[in-house]
Length: 240
Image (cartoon, rainbow, N blue to C red):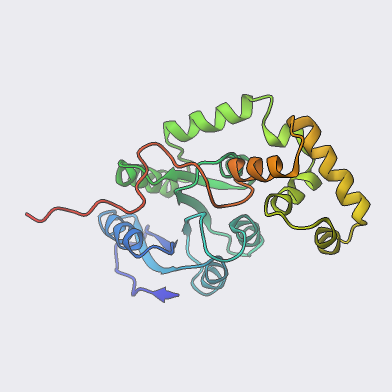
């Protein structure tokens, strides 16, 4: 974790911790923060584990997170942060736009959810202004995606129970029923029963189909769809 010396910007600034494994995006966000009087960029880290430790050490007002991190499930990390005494406002800036990620807006106390699109700088400034005023900010395309998911009769959270949702990542990774039974302290027959109960309402017939479905929806974090015009890396500024 890198802690940056804070620059005095006045009494009403909010400190921001950035959790991002990509160096180009870290530099881009640091540059945007430098242009906003109400935000003080206090440091960055690369993983979810580091984010939790950094939040406890620095107690930032805002944590800006990329969901695609190299260690444990970022959803678990956010839930852990919500239990901290000095719980920060959580904002997301990510390449992920799958159903599981979009549903996160409704499941957890996410104050802002942004995609890495060509207008990321404007979105960030709008988000920081909203957070500084104690408000929530979601760009129009994110609101549209959330509302589409909410209204879908086939949304995974309308079809699957909480237990089944927790099992899908393991099915999606091709983990054996025996290994899943040990992980969840279940009988192997119970795991197989859940597998059948998941396949039926989804209209799937084979475990290989469930693996593909789990990838498509975002239960497994590779092979994911990307936002329209998404930037894998921020555009380089042209020199004058």
